[in-house]
Image (cartoon, rainbow, N blue to C red; front, side, top):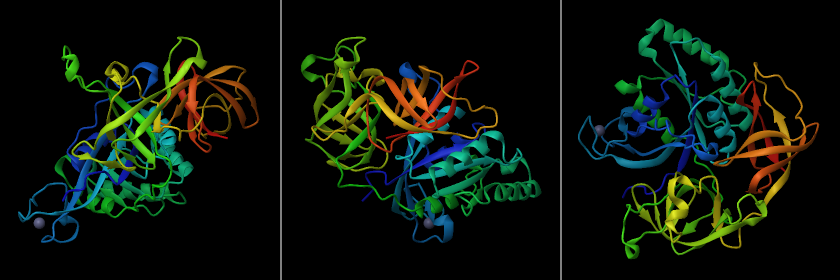
Length: 403
Ligand code: ZN
C-alpha cells in the first residue's frame, strides 16, 4: 500500500539562479515554479510545493535502487514505497530567507543548492548558510548543480570550495552531491539520502495547530445552490492531529467592521474531508500540505483569502493579540547597516504563512514591542522574520521571537 501522507518537509535554499526548480522536478516530477502571481494581496507568499514517494527496488543494488517511478526502469520490477516527502520552496531571495525563518517549525530538512559554474560562496549562498546556522538545521543535503557546464577539474575545485565554506557550520558534515537534474545524474543518490534523513519528532498529542497556506472555492461559477461545496483550506499541521468530523476554529477570522481591529471574530466550521493531494484520509498528522474540506461559505475562502490564518480545535486555540513583546536579533548582512528602530517604524513580519504589516511601538536594546495591523495568534517562542524598508525595498534585517 502506498504512503498516504508526507512524513518530512524539506525546504530548499540556494541562490535563485542555481537550478532549484529543475532539481525539484527531477526529485518529484513536479514543477514548483508557479511563482509569477505569487505575491498577492497582503504581500502573502505562495509557497511552491511538491511531494513524492521514494521507492526502493529490491532487485537493484546501491543508490540505483531508489526511484520515484512505480516500475523500476532498470529491471522492470515493482519497487516498494519507503518514504513520502515534500519540498517547500519560496520565490526570490529576501522572501526565501524570511520563509525559512518563519517556517522554521515546519521545515524538517534542507536541500542546499549550489551551482558549480560560479565561485562558492556567492553572497546569497553565504546568507543562506547564515540562516541554516541560525535555525540550527543539521538535516541537510548539499546539491552541487550545473557540474556538466564546468568539466571535472573545475567541479572538483568547486567541491573543495564548498567543503571550506561549510567548515565549522551546522552542516559541516552534510553530503555534497554533484548533480545534473535534467539528465537525472545522481537523482537516485539524492533520493537515497532523503530516504535516510532523520524523521521529525512531531508532537502528536498536542492540540492541533495548522497554518493556512492556501484557500479555495472549488465550485464552478453558476453551480446550483444545493450542489455547492464548502470552502477548502490547504496548509500544514505543525502539531497534533485533525480528524474528519472535528469542529475547528479559524483565527483571527473575519473582520466584521472594516478598519476596527477589535471586530475580528473566529470562523467555526466542521471538517468534512481531508485530502493529501493523492488520497482521502480520515485523520491527518503533521507532514506535507493537506487540504481540508469544510462547511465554510465558499465565498469566504476563494482566492486564498484565508491564507496566513491558523486553525485548530474549537476552544483549544492560542490567544490572538494585536500587540506583543519580542526579542529582536539582527542578522549580519554585508550590505545592511544595523540601526535602531525609529518610533512607529512600519515593518513587515513573516509569521508562519502570514506576512503582517506591523509597527514597532517601542524598543529598548533587543526588546521590541510590536503592534500588528490585525490580530495574530501568540505562541511563545515563535520566530518571525523582520523585514524593514531600506532604500525603498523591503529587506530581511533580522528575526524576532515572541515572548
Ligand atoms: Zn530494479
